[in-house]
Every structure is written in C-alpha cells, then in structure tokens.
Image 1 (cartoon, rainbow, N blue to C red):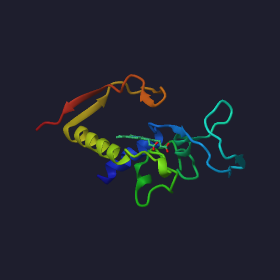
Image 2 (image 1 turned 30 degrees about the vertical axis):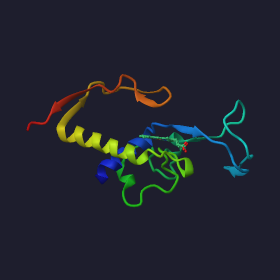
Image 3 (image 1 turned 180 degrees about the vertical axis):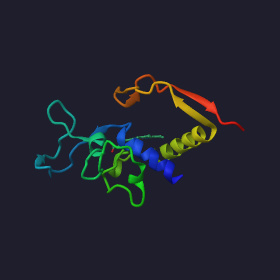
Image 4 (image 1 turned 90 degrees about the vertical axis):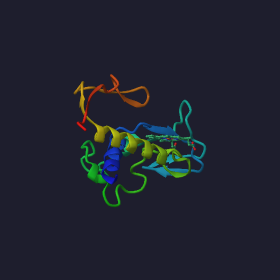
Length: 146
Ligand code: HEM
C-alpha cells in the first residue's frame, strides 16, 4: 500500500499529531548561531524543544510546504530528520510501525467499503494540545453496493 502510506505521511507532515517534544542537551552545541549549553531542558527560562510542525514546513526541504502532495514521499522521500512525526534518534516512537499498520488497515476499510462525504467542509483544526478537527470530523458513510 505504498501510495496510501504516502498519503498518510503527507497528512502526518502537514498535521503531525505530536507537534514536538522537550529534550535535554547532553553536551554543548551550536544551532543556527545559538550556543546551547549542556544541561538545557524544559524549565521556566531555558527550553529545548524540537518542533515537528515547523520542521515539516521548511521550504528548503519541502517546496510549497502548505501544498498537500503525497508524491514527496516517492523514491527516497524526504532527507533524514526533515520528516519527524515519530521523532528521531534513540527515543523515537517505538509504536511507529504499529501506528502505520493501524492507519493503513483503517484507510483500506474506509476506502474499500464506503464512499464518504464530510459534513462540515470548512471545519477548523484545533490544538488541545494535539491537532484535532474541531467538531470531530463528522462524515456521512455510504456503503459501496455489493
Ligand atoms: C500516529 C501515531 C503516533 C505518533 C505520531 C507518535 C509520535 C510519537 C513521538 C513524536 C514521540 C516522541 C519521540 C521523541 O521525543 O523523540 C513518541 C514517543 C512514544 N510513543 Fe508514539 N506515536 C504514535 C503512536 C504510538 C503507538 C501506537 C504507540 C504504542 C503502541 C506509541 C508509543 C510511544 C512510546 C512508548 C513513546 C515514548 C518513547 C521513549 O520516550 O523512549 N506511539 N511517539
């Protein structure tokens, strides 16, 4: 289901369910000209946070970043650490393969068994703190004829 997964990835790029996370610097480093000292982590004044939402919209790696385009994931796909809905490195989400399976099984059943129509076409996405359709994405399901 390569194309379906490309569609799911493009959705995870534009609306990552986990918008980022806090980390602690284990050594001194420099990022974009900012010196980050060892020991920085989430606290009142010193916050080290990686953001999936902004990383995913970097035009250097995703041309026309607001455009929904599953073909970005064809071939080798995005450069390492530019697409990070499941994080990256040693604390990356251990449930990512299970999530992939669940998403693809859901998409398969939805598309193969039903035609569906969104009931609210201009429904907003709200953050509480994860992104969700404001009214729960009501849809009308119409079973395909057998
Ligand atoms: C679309 C679904 C999911 C997304 C987008 C997601 C995303 C993430 C992200 C971004 C992190 C933090 C990574 C980091 O800070 O470096 C994380 C951690 C984690 N996720 Fe997921 N996740 C998903 C589904 C799941 C599922 C299905 C499970 C379990 C069955 C799971 C279990 C975990 C656990 C245990 C951690 C903590 C790992 C650690 O701190 O070592 N996740 N997830």
